Each structure stands twice: as C-alpha cells, then as structure tokens.
Image (cartoon, rainbow over all chains, first blue to last red; front, side, top):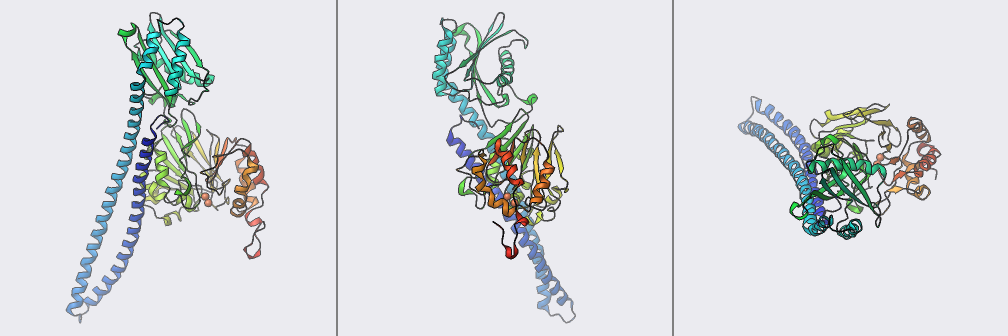
Length: 271
Length: 256
Ligand SMILES: [Fe+2]
Ligand SMILES: [Fe+2]
C-alpha cells in the first residue's frame, strides 16, 4: 500500500483483514475454553463411570445399574468423538482463515498497484506524449518540460520523472527531481535507474550514459529515503511519433515496501 | 496513526505497528514493534487479547506471518502476553521470555505443544541472531518493573526497546509519537515510574548493564518514543528517581 492508493481501498483492506483476524482470535479463545470444559467433563464423567462400573461389578448389582454403567461407557466414547470432531473443525477453520488472510492481503496489494498504474497511464498519457513530442521540436526544451511537469506533479505527486533515448553514442537520459534529494539518496537511486533504463532499451549494461539531472525547485523533496521503496512506471516512447527509441516514466516511493535482499528484487517493478 | 517507521536501510527496518486508536483498545494503550531484517521478522511484545487483529493487519504491509522467526516478550504482563495464543497459531515463531515466566505463561492458555516453542532467557540475557549473523541483544532490566525483565537493543538501528521503562500512561492517539520536550513529558511518566519501577538500585544496575551503547531512540511499550535530547534527559531523570520499595511506607502508602 502506498500514498497513491485510493483511501476507500485502504479502508476496505484494513476492515477485511481486521475482521478475519478477529474471527481467528475469537476462535482460538473459544477452542481453548472448549478444551478446558471438555477436560473437566472427561474427568467428572470418568469418575462417575468408574463408580458405576464398580457398582455394576458387584454380585448383587441389579440390572438397572448394569445398564446405566454400560450407557455411561458409551457416553464416554461419544464425548471423545464430539471433542475430536470439534477440534478437527477448529483446525480446518483456522487454516481456512489463515489462507483467506494471506490471499486477501496479496490480492489487495496487487489490486492497489494495478489501480495506481492504470489511473496514471490512462489519465496522463497526453502529458507524457507532450514530453516526447517536444524533445526534438521545442527549442527551449527544459523550461517547457519543467512547466509540463509542474502540471503533472499537481495531479500525480511523483518523486522522480525521467525520459531517456537510445542514441548512436549510447543513452541520453534526463532525470527530474521534485525538490533536492541528498547526494546519498541520489547515489542510491540513480545507478539502479540507469541499469533499468539500459535493460529496457536493450542497450548493453556498460553503454555510455549521458545523464542530466534537473531539480524542480518549486517543491521540496518528499521522496522516500531508499531505492528499495521505489516503484517505477515506464512507458516506451512510440517510435512512429518520435522516430527515436526511448522510454519515459515516473518513480514513486511506497513507504511500506518490504526490506528485501537487493539480489532478490524484481525488475522492473522496483528500481 | 498508521505504521511509523523508526529506522530503515536496505536490509533492516524497525517499525511501530499501527497502534490501536483511541477506545478500540480497552485498558492501557500499548505499542507493538516489528523488526524486519532481510526476509526475517521479530515481533516485540505483541500485545493483549483483542489487539492482534490490528497488529496483524499492520504487519502484513511488511511481511507474512511465516517470516516471523521470534516473538520477544519483555516480561509476563497481560498487555504483552494476552494475545500470544493467536500469534502462536498463525506463526511458527519461537517465543523468548525470562526463565522466570516460562512455567507461568501456559496459564494464559496456549495451543497444544506451544510450550515447546518457549525459550527461557537466562538472567544474564541472550542474543537473538539473524540468518546473516547480525544480532539483537536481550539486555537484563530486572525489576524494571518485572522480576524477570528484558530490553531489546538493536545495534543496527541503535534503538533500545525498553518495555515498560519510559512508558507513559496515556492515550497516544491525539499526541505526538515522539518525545522531543522531556520536561513537558515528565508529568505523563512520573507517577507510573515511582510506583511500578521496583527500586533505585534496579535502575542503577540496569544503567551499568546498558553501558555506553549508542542510543538513537528509546522505544517503550506504552506512549511516545524518546529521541534526541529527550533520551539523555530521560536517563538523567530516571537515574535520580526514588521509586518502588525506596518509597514504600507502612500501611501500603508511598512517599509522594
Ligand atoms: Fe508491565
Ligand atoms: Fe506494559
């Protein structure tokens, strides 16, 4: 979940997960209470059954006592069966609830991510196209782009915007930060971003990179501290519009992204 | 308030899990912490009965129950252990607690065979080791307030998770999650520490145990988290505090 996810989805996720785990917790408690009661039942019933068996075993025991002793023995078996059945049910329900929690958690995360991506791409394709089309046609490209990004940022508060083109000598990339990240934050983010761009543009990993960094000073930096938290959304520049092989996209921080081993991160979802 | 990340680097995360808000939690409000190191998690003092759903929901943002390797309990109180049975059902975690309490914990009602997952911490403390060899220190803090009591010191984040020490008796929903102005905070903790902490000597012994470990935060089980200047202010205050048996008078009265 991150700050771009619609709030009603966040609430729904929280309510469902809380309700399912509250059920699980109640069930744990109910099963403990049942076990305690069953234990007492076994004990008391056992004492009664033994007394009756002793009475029934006497030579002068009448038929009724013998019958009662037999029924008491049957009841003991039945009680054990009821408890066994109940506990098996508890285990089944607990496993089902655990599976439900895991599945709902996972699918709500996927849904949230899909919504963010779809929303962004649907609503802002025009903005992205303006960036691409202007690249070779607008003389004062940078001020023009900064204006476009100002509008874009008001609608979608990205933490990073980039546009990259594969050219004869290698890769030309422009990187726009809203605000000014620290040098450490930049050195955490940028090498991974460059690797990602080269891969997406089918360039060799050691291709020359001409990286220009721009700061959009009309806003302070709100980005997240580590590269692990970033999600990248890229869009190939349509060749027929620009005649260039290129890519552009945005990066946005997801503060709840997992701490993961770098080697296990999956591209291109994370930088 | 939602989850509050106290420390994050590329492999290590310390987070105060979504605290229950306002009147959702009956009784005293408590803090539950998750430490996530690469793919392994440790839960600290997971809370009383009824708290688990909120904590689990918050935890799922970061890791699955299968990733929780250990639950570390600072002591045996119900606001810490009351929900343990459910955590034992949904995780495979081992539970670390003072050797004094391992035979009492089953009285909270644990699932079958769960007793085998209890690890008795010796009086001198212990270390929890992550898969890559990094450690958490379980530091003795006996009689602060429980007879068998441990703090967790995380050398990576330099956070001391201090159980009830430093705890404030308040509903934190409307308050800042951090203590920045200790003199203004004292009124929230003075009564609790005078009555619940056992003695000045217990504090002095704990201070000697803590030594000169660097502290970025002191994160108690109730109330706001100490950082910056508030850490040294708190330590200076507790060093001088008469408490518990120091103040006990005939007739069950306590010196003010
Ligand atoms: Fe306590
Ligand atoms: Fe407590």
